[in-house]
Length: 385
Ligand code: UDP
Ligand code: GLC
Image (cartoon, rainbow, N blue to C red; front, top):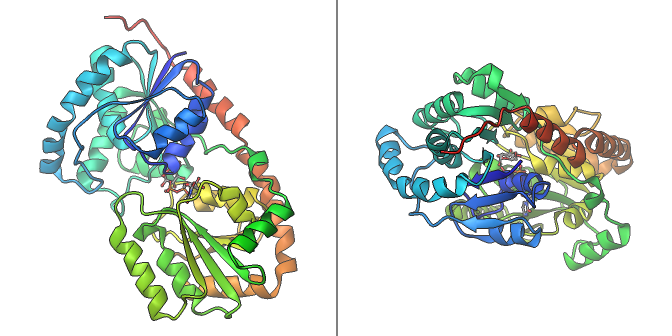
């Protein structure tokens, strides 16, 4: 089966890193077409996945676009569609990995009769999207796609609540290679030395910098924790959230936490950094559709505290494989961080159970097999025109 993957982003967000792992298994029979250039292209090339940037105008449609902006941006994607149609004719399947890719892929599928699959990485709700965007996504998915792969039950439920066709949608979680997250203690110690946190209790936060990822919640909670507890905040403002980044620095200064918070920017060595931490927090203020960082923390054998909403509730069982806290509740978060600091031994059993459960439930081989089976069930007719 020859697959044309479409993704709007040149940046390595979670949806793109998920796509990377799927595309790798089709690397001799696929092309990843990106609508913008960026670091993700290099990451795909380093993994020998064929990639092509499809030159396009900057598509100005945003998650909050209204109807007028939507129609306006629709005219901008016509050249993109014209470029993709001849490429798509060489493939059996179009696999749209993002919303803009769904819009483009839907029309290309209509013109070429090549089946379309939509990988839904979002919870379609008003916290993230405008009504216009939700309607557009659901209408296109219902009419043009043969299959919708939702990254969690939470994403599936929101799709159906928004009018999505129940029969089209199947849940497949993100997959991970557990071996990648087995980092030796000597490397963890070395990383702690490099970070100058050898004798500290380190809480890690690993997400792109964005208001809804809630880095400010961890900073507020840290101010309520014993002074020996420090935080590393890993990730960059991938989609222009510079103002929020500055607010975080300001918040750290106002709370006098300069010596207890380190911003590390975007890093490629997440397993090493996670293993160097004592505890990992996830603090999204809106329901997280899946939350790769939560599973990654579990695979590193680290206790994880996650915001109790969306996909995170499917990943962590409170008190058994991690902790769930009320989103935006800094007191509750500070309390659990402090408990973990005082009773590190009690966390070992939870972290070990988390590692075992995550290795079983989110193993990349198993997940890729699920996707391959779903794709094989599609009727890939003769679409030559
Ligand atoms: N990540 C990374 N470097 C960073 C910060 C994050 O490689 O500096 C990775 C992280 O390991 C995870 C992904 O980016 O695999 C983020 O995915 P997640 O589902 O947690 O959130 P998203 O950003 O997609 O909403
Ligand atoms: C999106 C979601 C995130 C999810 C990732 C992979 O980026 O925001 O929650 O983990 O896709 O499916």
